[in-house]
Image 1: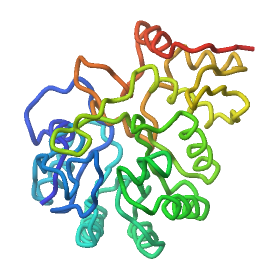
Image 2: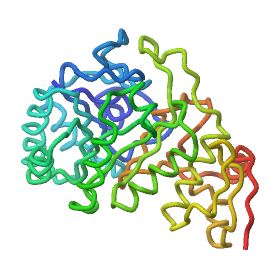
Image 3: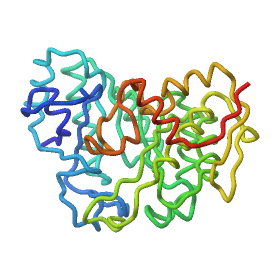
Image 4: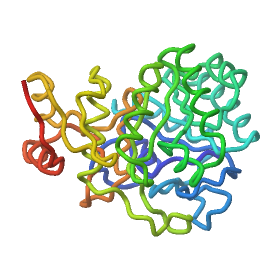
Length: 318
């Protein structure tokens, strides 16, 4: 059985329902259990959360044949990629590889995989069977945070991701969760290092989930998250550390910013979803009507003004 995010199921007409924003990626999940102990995750072996949830999203089960039929009967043009979330176990990874081969025999669509890949052999096998992008999660932006929420192999994980990013350019991704007691400066150091090694980096806002160790941990302030979004956007544009001023690790000002980049800021571009091509993951971090951390679409004029206000930072434009 395969789990399908509710939004994906609605877009594919598997479930009835109205979507505010159509997903541009189909989000799937495979594996019966996860052996990881991530303190923030509903799928953790130590979590008491519902196992049909990941973050705040419900994932109903479906037979793989029914899922493929739904794709073959899909008449819209919104979904352009599949993202397969793989539970942290050897059994789940093997099951995922078999499922990817099944998808590829029926559909012509790019596939991203987020999995516990710890060696080049498994990584190469995923690429050889047709995976377009392989995501290896970091989550914690420094060693202390990582060991608190994930495990004890921070340096080893970073080096593996960087080495694979440099060797398989454009094929490796990771993500960082903002709001786990790291500093903005921690994120800068890690993000810049990853980008220089051709790793695609997605940002997530920490989302407390009932039944996890961090269920009472607060999400990041919107000001903090907006500053991280802009900082990482500028890193991708080639801005280096001397453009950013930090006080006790917190980003307080950015200068200079050229006028072209400033126009992009005013259009809200840095505050949209970042990561794999054609991924917009609607409401993964948010509730409809609540605080929007990652915009899944172009911002309207009022939203563009709002995100600048939320940013609340001095920008020196030249």
